[in-house]
Amino acid sequence: KTPPSGGRGAKHILVIPGDGIGPEVTTWGKAVLEQIGKDFGHEFTFDEALMGHVAIEATGNPLPDETLAKAKASDAILFGAVGHAKYDNDPSAKVRPEQGLLKIRKELGLYANLRPIMLFDELLEASSLKPEILKGTDILFFRELTGDVYFGEKKRSEDRNTASDLMIYSRYEVERIAIKAYEAARVRGKKLCSVDKANVLETSRLWREVVQEIAKNYPDVETEHMFIDNAAMQLVKNPKKFDVVLTANLFGDILTDEASQIAGSMGMLASASIGDGTGFFEPIHGSAHDIAGQDKANPLASMLSVALMLEIGFGLKEEAKKVTDAIDKALKDGYRTGDIADSKTDKSKILGTKAMGQKV
Ligand code: GGG
Image 1: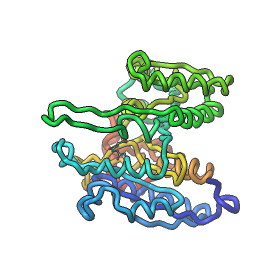
Image 2: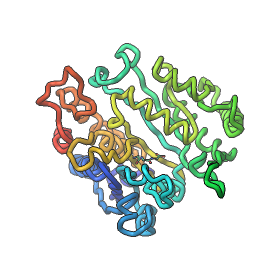
Image 3: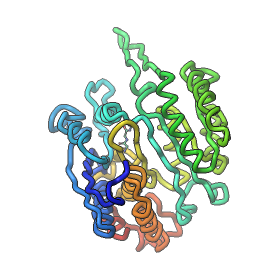
């Protein structure tokens, strides 16, 4: 979406804090938007809605109709996280927080989940990988978001001893995300790696066939096809070899958690989900109930999600850069949350969620 009058039109943002650390981190994402609004003279208006465990508790539904209606009427959505340990330990639970997230993605037609692996130089030491392997890594994942085993039919036999999740993709679903990924590759490093398991899975054979067809329209982009097991290994062995990575829902979910270790922590990775309607911006991390309400969560992924909202959602590049520059400055000044601190961090500069948000 391009904002009217040179980026000065009013934008209505729905904040869905969700569960666990979601409310703590989205507070700081929203604060970034308010500050950018003041600095650049943009008008951002806000509303809030329930999703996940908090919505189940309040209404019995992980995605209440009111939330969906508000989401459809907004210009962008800032989301925190969903999940609760209660459901993880109860496999028989029929209503689960994650159903809200999957449903809103489907309802809004958010089929492309962009997950940039941005490496701040100051965090090279915080990573589990060697700095010389990491330096210069810049990857943009395209995770397909509305297909795969997440949405295929789920079954349990009558005796409850056999279970199945249908992995299903259509040509159209692969085509539309492949085009989005190739368009991005064209203006980035002109390299695209499509990740699948075509030696075993029929869905992956369709995936590869479609990507090969789309590739013909992008002769300027170098295409590589890689099996998921090899990609998982290459990602930690030689992350610099990747530019745009295109993959399915399940593989993308797993690979990007792995890739968060390149950036130093799950608390550093933001995402943008785009497609047919309103853009949806969220950190890739979950609800982290073990640290919820303790002022320990890293708010930077939520703030970086706002940078993606500004750039991808509203076309406000300068404003987005101001956000990433402010985060870079806080890190250069030595400030860290616990998840990105290492043995060399000045202990007095290890901050809680609130203090880190204020520094930025
Ligand atoms: N902010 C991401 C989040 O809440 N993740 C929890 C979750 O269940 N995610 C499932 C998914 O991303 O497919």
